[in-house]
Length: 110
Image 1 (cartoon, rainbow, N blue to C red):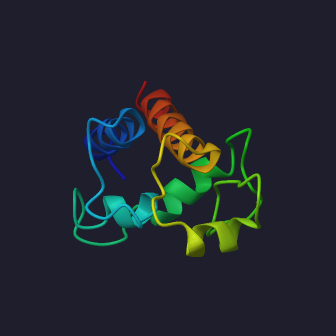
Image 2 (image 1 turned 45 degrees about the vertical axis):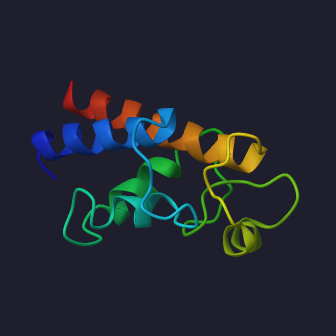
Protein backbone atom coordinates (compact mmCIF):
# COMPACT_ATOMS: atom_id res chain seq x y z
CA UNK A 1 0.00 0.00 0.00
CA UNK A 2 1.64 3.23 -1.12
CA UNK A 3 1.59 6.49 0.84
CA UNK A 4 -0.92 8.21 -1.46
CA UNK A 5 -3.39 5.40 -0.89
CA UNK A 6 -2.75 5.46 2.88
CA UNK A 7 -3.58 9.19 2.94
CA UNK A 8 -6.75 8.61 0.94
CA UNK A 9 -7.78 5.77 3.25
CA UNK A 10 -6.97 7.88 6.33
CA UNK A 11 -9.12 10.73 5.02
CA UNK A 12 -12.01 8.36 4.36
CA UNK A 13 -11.75 6.71 7.79
CA UNK A 14 -11.65 10.10 9.46
CA UNK A 15 -14.73 11.07 7.48
CA UNK A 16 -16.51 7.99 8.79
CA UNK A 17 -15.39 8.88 12.32
CA UNK A 18 -16.68 12.44 12.17
CA UNK A 19 -19.79 11.77 10.13
CA UNK A 20 -18.55 13.83 7.17
CA UNK A 21 -18.68 10.59 5.14
CA UNK A 22 -21.80 8.44 5.41
CA UNK A 23 -21.54 4.69 4.87
CA UNK A 24 -23.63 3.52 1.92
CA UNK A 25 -25.55 1.27 4.31
CA UNK A 26 -25.77 1.87 8.06
CA UNK A 27 -25.67 -1.91 8.60
CA UNK A 28 -22.19 -2.07 7.07
CA UNK A 29 -19.05 -2.11 9.17
CA UNK A 30 -15.79 -0.34 8.40
CA UNK A 31 -14.48 -2.67 5.69
CA UNK A 32 -17.81 -2.80 3.87
CA UNK A 33 -18.12 0.98 4.11
CA UNK A 34 -14.73 1.34 2.43
CA UNK A 35 -15.38 -1.37 -0.15
CA UNK A 36 -16.62 0.19 -3.34
CA UNK A 37 -16.21 3.72 -2.00
CA UNK A 38 -12.50 4.25 -2.42
CA UNK A 39 -11.21 0.84 -3.46
CA UNK A 40 -12.43 -1.68 -6.04
CA UNK A 41 -12.34 -4.53 -3.54
CA UNK A 42 -11.20 -5.59 -0.12
CA UNK A 43 -7.56 -4.71 -0.81
CA UNK A 44 -7.20 -2.88 2.49
CA UNK A 45 -8.92 -5.33 4.86
CA UNK A 46 -5.65 -6.82 6.13
CA UNK A 47 -4.25 -3.36 6.82
CA UNK A 48 -7.38 -2.27 8.67
CA UNK A 49 -7.40 -5.46 10.73
CA UNK A 50 -3.71 -5.03 11.53
CA UNK A 51 -4.22 -1.46 12.72
CA UNK A 52 -7.42 -2.32 14.62
CA UNK A 53 -5.47 -4.90 16.61
CA UNK A 54 -3.36 -2.02 18.02
CA UNK A 55 -6.39 -0.05 19.19
CA UNK A 56 -6.63 0.05 23.00
CA UNK A 57 -10.32 -1.00 22.90
CA UNK A 58 -9.75 -3.85 20.41
CA UNK A 59 -12.23 -6.68 21.00
CA UNK A 60 -9.62 -9.37 20.40
CA UNK A 61 -11.59 -10.73 17.43
CA UNK A 62 -9.96 -10.01 14.06
CA UNK A 63 -13.17 -9.93 11.97
CA UNK A 64 -15.16 -8.01 14.60
CA UNK A 65 -12.73 -5.53 16.21
CA UNK A 66 -15.33 -3.23 17.79
CA UNK A 67 -16.28 -4.20 21.34
CA UNK A 68 -19.85 -4.10 22.58
CA UNK A 69 -20.84 -3.56 26.19
CA UNK A 70 -23.82 -5.92 25.80
CA UNK A 71 -22.82 -8.78 23.48
CA UNK A 72 -19.95 -10.69 21.93
CA UNK A 73 -18.28 -8.74 19.09
CA UNK A 74 -19.69 -11.09 16.43
CA UNK A 75 -23.23 -11.03 17.79
CA UNK A 76 -23.18 -7.25 18.17
CA UNK A 77 -22.08 -6.90 14.54
CA UNK A 78 -24.73 -9.26 13.20
CA UNK A 79 -27.66 -7.86 15.17
CA UNK A 80 -26.90 -4.15 14.91
CA UNK A 81 -29.32 -2.18 12.71
CA UNK A 82 -27.14 0.93 12.69
CA UNK A 83 -23.43 0.33 13.18
CA UNK A 84 -22.72 4.06 13.27
CA UNK A 85 -25.32 5.34 15.75
CA UNK A 86 -23.64 7.94 17.95
CA UNK A 87 -26.28 7.40 20.63
CA UNK A 88 -24.88 3.92 21.35
CA UNK A 89 -21.55 2.96 22.85
CA UNK A 90 -21.10 0.50 20.01
CA UNK A 91 -21.54 3.22 17.37
CA UNK A 92 -19.20 5.58 19.22
CA UNK A 93 -16.60 2.79 19.52
CA UNK A 94 -16.79 2.16 15.76
CA UNK A 95 -16.24 5.85 15.00
CA UNK A 96 -13.37 5.98 17.51
CA UNK A 97 -11.73 3.01 15.80
CA UNK A 98 -12.04 4.77 12.43
CA UNK A 99 -10.26 7.81 13.85
CA UNK A 100 -7.57 5.58 15.37
CA UNK A 101 -7.00 3.90 11.99
CA UNK A 102 -6.76 7.30 10.29
CA UNK A 103 -4.23 8.52 12.84
CA UNK A 104 -2.12 5.36 12.55
CA UNK A 105 -2.07 5.55 8.75
CA UNK A 106 -0.91 9.17 8.90
CA UNK A 107 1.87 8.20 11.33
CA UNK A 108 3.06 5.59 8.84
CA UNK A 109 3.17 8.16 6.07
CA UNK A 110 5.08 10.55 8.28
